[in-house]
Image (cartoon, rainbow, N blue to C red; front, side, top):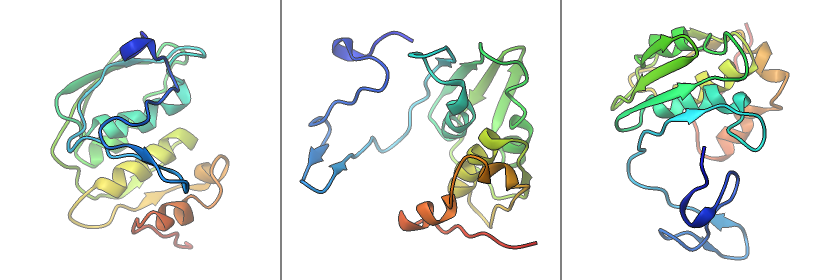
Length: 165
């Protein structure tokens, strides 16, 4: 992906735009009212990381417009798509590309995690899903890469909890 406005590249953030500010306690960021669709292509560093592709896809499921996500690093990295579709996502796979058409909302449903990245993407999608509770099963994958993720989201105000089965 090319560098952003004024030559900024990946991982750089502009502070002081659109109401962003520093207050001595941290950085406060206010995004736009609606998420706009964006096309991405996974690449080795410093490109878009393949390990964030599934999570980014969850965001694009509720973005305005359509986005193309092209996976160039690994084959079979779209295993999470069938579970996102259970939440109502509009995604079509064509080889190493996924066409994601953003929707106004996703709907709660039971889903099953297949790997670490899928676990995270399903939790993110479940947090924005409406009309019920999304239950993410097989979260042992999640624990391999994220420690106490539900507590971190709870500290941000999310309604998320872990149930023993």
